[in-house]
Image (tube, rainbow over all chains, first blue to last red; front, side, top):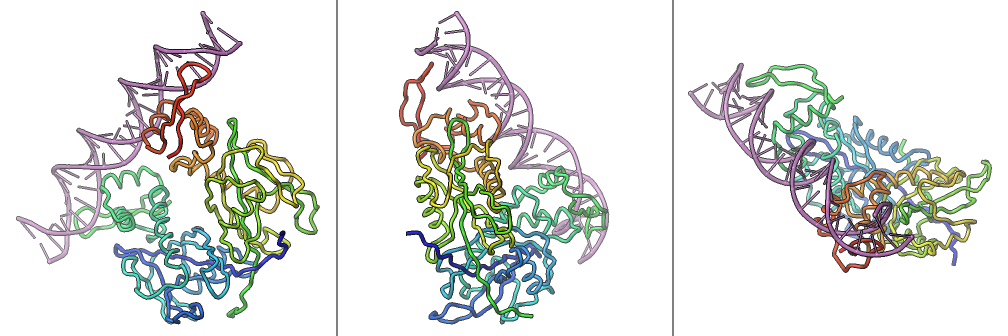
Length: 217
Length: 217
DNA sequence: CCAAAAGTGTTTTTCATACACCCATGT
DNA sequence: ACATGGGTGTATGAAAAACACTTTTGG
């Protein structure tokens, strides 16, 4: 009855990277061709990810791959969930330790994998139509859900903005991600009361009063 | 530069099982002797866990091992975190997908692993002194933290109680786990208003008014 | 007869929400 | 002069927290 054989499997990390710009959440996707055999071998969209090397932690694996694919500047990285369905990759059993990362969006940063035909930032509401690699679509969905939940009770939104930002920027970010509007005054009040931001200076605004610039403390 | 070799590793599940009884949270621990070579080979305490078999999901692996070790009757199982430090097991790189489980405490249920010298329910505040296997102590701590957090905004406490319980039982469970007292009236009010419980019947109490018995709906 | 287990409502406080006007400037 | 970006305080309502007394019976 007792099975003494200990099996070994591939273990990868996959990272959902979030960037924010112009009232849109963006994620980078890569067009790859690693679908399973015996299926129509069309190209499919995938997250950035890589098998874990023998001496690296999964976080290190994420950072390594993000440097390769995106050019780094990640500001936040958190483990999301481990996806482990026995059939998620039909070629060989593969475990995916999924992470999500927050970064300041910079268009220039996308490098692209060596084996990717295309690498692109997609706004969340205009994801590509084509097929997805493995369960990457589900991973993305869970990451979005987690990000929304996290935003409401932990101050992670800052990591998607430049180091210096206005309260209007921050408000807009929250409204975009959570898909609903907040009262400006209540929002400013709460953020200021949180003690998490520090006033830096005023800059002339396009209209009216000067804009107050803060940084995350 | 590009490393085409894909390494394979052991992937296990480890489960922190919670039971509740007499104003105490309990977890089962197993005394095992699988410490790494070249270290003093004293026995150490470990969670219940097992390598994942080729065709089973991690949840199935949990259930299989829980049946073997504890005699089942798990009522709730949730993925906690994947522990993946390259040196967490010095014999071979091993990934642990950790889960936590809630069950109704039954003293008789502990069976014990084949290779375990001892298997015991420990109250959380009287954990054994001896060394712990791998990072199982940290896993336990994270599970406790998660359970406390979860309890506050999702109705998981029921899964630690018998199917029929009084509000006093439930209150006491919350006070025990969260380590603080709640106002009885406010607590009853909120639980009743939640619509999650259903009144079954009254039973004579030891003193005073009869006790109202509910079940989780 | 009193300590213990169990039941039940009201008031207060706190927090979230809703809401309206002023200022400066580019067009 | 008006539309736009930007700034500010108060009033209301809902939810959480605080709080006290009654019933019954075993010892």
